[in-house]
Image (cartoon, rainbow, N blue to C red; front, side, top):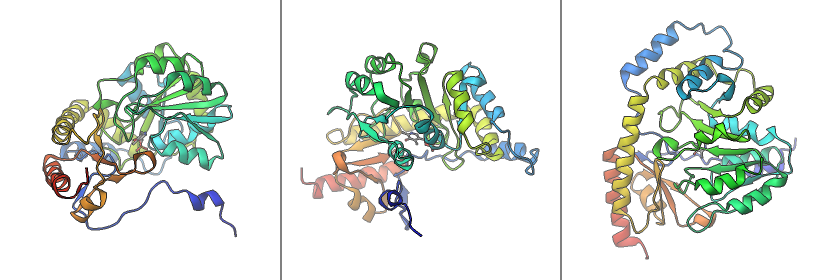
Length: 339
Ligand SMILES: *Cc1c(COP(=O)(O)O)cnc(C)c1O
């Protein structure tokens, strides 16, 4: 038996187990669903036969999402998390490589590597803004281009004029909007104009459903149709489909919580302005080498490496969690940080 070399050298997630009291490392929503909404979901589940396979192309959820955005279900694909959709997008189009804009989301690399597809990187500049001209140049031979806006882990959105430069090449472009609900900016409107645009969204962040695993994309009929030709037929189970559908009917609550998180984000940002980057997501990137210091005090955040070595990414939590974070980080800045 010989395990493939790439599997030995690459692992997307490190498992951290331990008795930590505050988890601010995975950009999860700090709020679970309220009991009434869970009851509503259970009520729907009671009516659902579990012995039958789910709809083969997840039509019930695609229809609900289509209605939400005022598009056709033929322009919507859903996956077992946004991650599953990324795994298909990576291999859907012809081309020599994919294009990414580091520092960015690790899963583009994971699926490219797993499929033996080379990655061409066009780094973000010092303010984490993309270089539209250079990406456009590289996109000629690319199968697909990944742009993340708001970007993970930097938190900023990308400017429209840079995005248009890439879209105008005609190459398939994913704008990963996993955090768009926390931002004022979305590029969904560009779908009317660009057949090569794919908008990726998820229920994991704003909708509080990270544990349920549901993501979706909006794109041209041609792209959605192609994707369903290669997609695992039953990967989206009925439990997920029902739960996501119910949550779409509670968008008021979702946005109420989003506004709470944005307020908290700005409160933490104001406290650490010197070290934090402005964010339009549910996390803050900070130039503070405080990972171990926080961990020893029971707070888990994301430690970054490479170009962002010495930085942490902190998910915005509940007010009490953020209070504790602010307290401990202030201690770090005052006593430990060598600035
Ligand atoms: C969280 C995230 C996703 C999707 O996550 P899923 O939980 O798989 O839906 C996609 N892109 C980025 C940049 C993310 O941070």
